[in-house]
Length: 271
Image 1 (cartoon, one colour):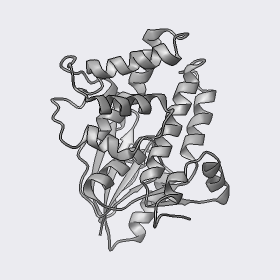
Image 2 (image 1 turned 180 degrees about the vertical axis):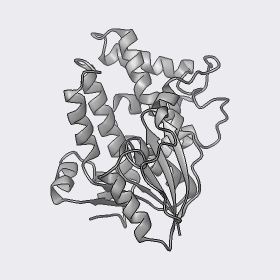
Image 3 (image 1 turned 30 degrees about the horizontal axis):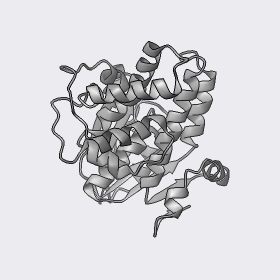
Image 4 (image 1 turned 45 degrees about the horizontal axis):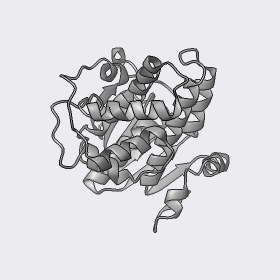
């Protein structure tokens, strides 16, 4: 069996915790092959691995957020999105309405040709969505700061959703966040099982980090916090299995409504 392990901010660049668990998982299952798809913060970490990969680790794919945010699109495109696609992305940005994950698959994978993974974000249609959300909900904030905040949020997401992940028999994410979303996307496109193992509640951990942070100020903290909860809900909704280490974490996630989609799906389990 070939297993695609999706990591974020951990293996193979950070020692201990989740990274040690990933290493032990591969070493403890030598009869299976593993592919690592890692999302890191800074491209300076590329290739600076803290672990020696076991023989059954057959490859690693690295993506870095600072590479994505420094990328440039060729030009703004007109009329890139259909009315239904615009409404789906509007709901994604606002977070006021749950959207079926298949809508994102349709937008970012099926039947769309783009010259750059940045084309959708840089389209006039998506700019109109940003402007609409701003005028309806955030007029009290500076528009320029609002735009750049949304760019930092959604540009990596749109970029990652358009990448072709390696084919595997199972996709296993070690958290929600960006790696949870692309795990769900890969499993959907390849029609394979998808599981999430959370050692902590990722969305709650991001909330605590953002509240304490200096890099985001005032009401923009609320934007970021809601964004990570949105990613978590999407990832949970696509998972065939969700595993937590402690019942407390499961209770926290249930209190946030993270498991509602799984309860409603026949055959889904929580452990």
